[in-house]
Amino acid sequence: MASPFQFRRVRQYFSILVLIFVYIVTSGLMLFALKTSVRNHFKDLWIEEAFQLTNQVERAANFESLPMENLGEEKRQEVQELLRRLTLGGSVIEEIFLIGTNNQVLFSSKPSLQESFEKRPYVQDKYLSKQKELLFYNRTDSTVAISVFKPVDYNTRRLGNLRLNVVISDLRAAKSTEFSMLLGCGIFLLVVGIIFFYLAFNSRKIHLPGVERAREEESPEKQEEGEESAPSLLPERLDKVDEEFGTLFMSLNKLYENTDDLDRTFSDSEKKIHYMMRVLNQGFLLLDLDMNLISFNEFLIDLLRFRTTSNARVKVEEVLRKNPQLTEIFQRAKDPMTHEVKRNSTVNLLNGSKIPVDVFAHPVYNGREMYGVVVYLKDTKVLKELEHSLQRSMKYGVISKLASSIGHEIRNPLSSLAIHTEIVDSMVERSISDPNRLTKIKKSISILNSEVERLNKLIDQFFKLAKTREATLSLEHINDLMNEVVDLIYQQALEKNINITKHFAPSLPMVKISKDQLKQVLINLVLNAYDAIGEREGGEVALQTEFREGKVLVSVKDNGSGIPVDVQKNIFDLYFTTKTSGGGIGLAISRKIVEAHEGRLYFETKPRLGTTFIMELPTLQN
Image (tube, rainbow, N blue to C red; front, side, top):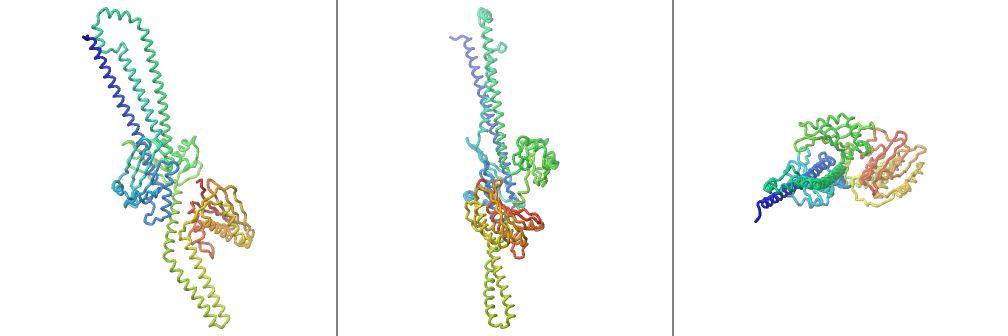
């Protein structure tokens, strides 16, 4: 039969097992809570980035300023091209939609998905009734998918909803952080458990009640034997303690190394965030409540005109100190009564120049507590170019509609006028015998015929400008095209006593162009150069090609009198001309053709020194 001491020892071991079980369960719950906390941290981080990207896309596209009622197809395609570019270059943005209240996709980065999206009206009904931003978050083992729906208003009415699909496929940083933290916490709990149980069962100052009662019931002889053997066992126990403490310190050292790995993981995560912010096409600043710089994106460095990585933070802080208006905007933005601040301003740069910007600032909250202010800086020069492009697109749209509606009404009277002029000419020859009078009438009829022919040519030019023709694009060497143009206009140069010089750069990359259309542009520029030189002696036209900043540049330079300052801003306007016989259409057509090639046509002029027209064309690399 078991003795009472044996029962107590069994109960003692059972208590130990229960204690170990409770400790393991508690540790497991702590690890699970830590894992959930880490995942929620990354979830909040990714969601915040998704909302920031949505705001940036909305400001970049500038939907509120677009006249939707009169929006031309070219401008629509231009906006869609902008949205498409925001999804390229390693961007985490996969798809961008602007969906109207009638379930119509107004703009999309992927027009091919428009039809399939419009066949799901229940998706629209689900979020169009909401007044705030919505977000759908889904995480798998390999990706995180976030869909943001944000209302877009236009002229105090709901224009629709901006949908942004963000897909984060590189989860190595998040998984590494989660694994490192769980591993570190697990090692820490294991070490704490070892220390606790070691001190609980081996320290002379901490005794289990069952063991004490069992020892009290032992015979005095055994107690005396234990006391006699205690001195001999003391060195052995001390060696064992030293060995266990050595193991403990090794575990603590490993935990310290894991902490370093965790710091590096968080540093990698911060780099990931900076990479995500690179897709923003605005300068981004995150400041704490004392206006200390927390973070910024690389676009801000380009905006502020300094491109360094070693002391970029110092230079950004110098720019903040140099612009007190930014401090005022910051103070207003962090005012609890002010939700956001928008202002047109000018930023003083470190090189002494100034740039016009749109400043947008709003506070950032962690729950209900404000912890900083986000400031966005947008270069307004880009917006002005978009506005000018929109105005030109609308102008061409009006011309196209006008041409299609009145083209036949103009040609029919001209045809009748030409026919009856010939009839009158034949009747005059038979009915008038006075030579002087006949000569005068014949001259008037000749003038009528020439004016009819001139009107027909003007209408042809009008149709060329208004009608959008699908061009055939091909890879061409720009120098070959320039040589063909020289062959066509060389005879006129000889007749006008104008010297033509060529400076063509060798080994230029090929460009994808419509050869006939660009030939038309170049001939028009050269003929304009001839007209600018006029009867001046020593006239010269210089044709040049070069490769600069990823683009092919073609320039046509004359040594005429230059373009007067008061007409420079109107030189590309439709029907604007300084010639007595010109129609003011050639440069407008030329600019339209170059812009259709995603290029740019502009000029540089100096009084009495001449004018240079420069055409920039993109290459296959960009």
